[in-house]
Length: 260
Image (cartoon, rainbow, N blue to C red; front, top):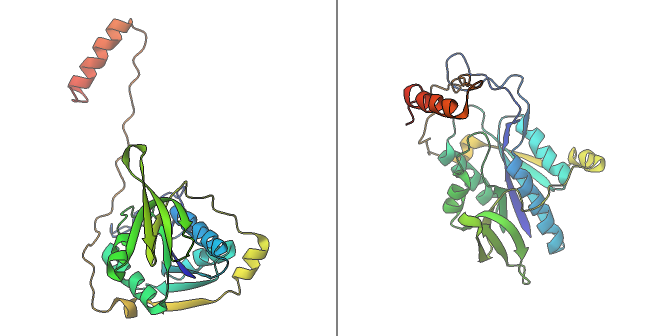
């Protein structure tokens, strides 16, 4: 069984973001980059699926600059077999372009039965790329999975999907399929020291994003990056009787906050 995992490298959630002087993006110098947290669940589920299948291959696919290799190596240290780095140097990619490139890379690889990925990336937070890849490849998709069980014939899976109100849907899908992962699907394993050492020698191919993209162009451009305005200090009412405080609160809500 050939299993792929789509991984994105994102800024650490504790990173202090700084905007470029021309407002064209964020300053990347000094930022700690990590594997997108939701993608960690996808990596774990891919490895578990290979183990349950009794064999196979887990391929990590990631698009980004040269530093992206670090995140691919992290996945390889967890237990993936090989990686594909799609170098996007000089490319401005929106969700559409990213989906086109990833789909082309998967088509080039061929024979992939299951594609795992995180439900969304925590930087752009768009949750669009996965659906685009599925559409371009013409395969089924299940978003967002909380349980994945191989069928007995190992040609499909039963996938539980979370929906609103605490309910779940169960899908019986045949491969190929793309599956979005989130917290609760599993507990990602830590990379062991032997795994880290082995990751250094595991195969890692490099593809050029521009060659995979063809004539497609971005449909969305991002301009005028700005940090959210600082929150104003709050007011604390004290030293009065409850009735007086309630009256003062209503006055502030009406005259200053203008919410009533």
